[in-house]
Image: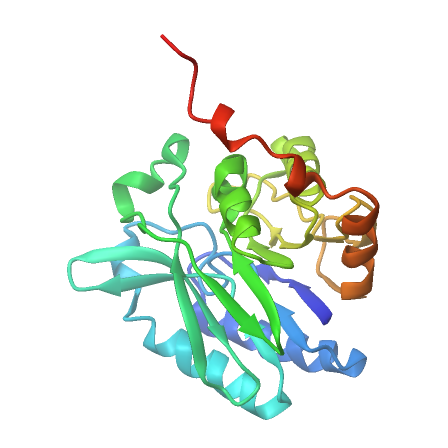
Length: 264
């Protein structure tokens, strides 16, 4: 699968301008003829203006229309980063996935909310993981802070994903964590990781890390950005994963009987 990552420069609280940036960068990315586009976390708003309810997209309708139209226009799959999604009284940090025909494939609500920034006070956590097919490839998605919880990626890997998509809004101050965690999740689960971070700054002015990357199951970096606006492209070839699994299949050496805690 050929994947392009859109490391978008996000203007906090400016959904119209950010949507314009998405259209511009998506058009540029299609010169490489990718099969799938990956967007960053909260691409319409940035992470995140407050009060978030004043900015949230009711049932994600505007974002879903935009993503569906882009998918149809370019006949490309889209893993739509995430949006602040108001469903009744609750607001979720939601990722929508669309296929080449503009049909919504799945929705994932971020399950681990970043309490140091108060995200858990403004959003409702999701309560399930999802896998989904894109062009016959089994994929999974996590959002930003989720990547710090290795159990999530492992569960998805045990359910057969070949590619993990990760939209994020990760700050530059913790760049080393970002780079280490996304490579670790690829290596320990023997999967491809496509990690899309934002460019620009958080609403308070803290710089974002950028450094989106495409990583193979051996931990090799196929493409990596710096801190500014960027479009990344790589071909995530299944044969690479097959060869790695044939030479070192760590899944068959797992000991699940040991993983439930210590005897007391």
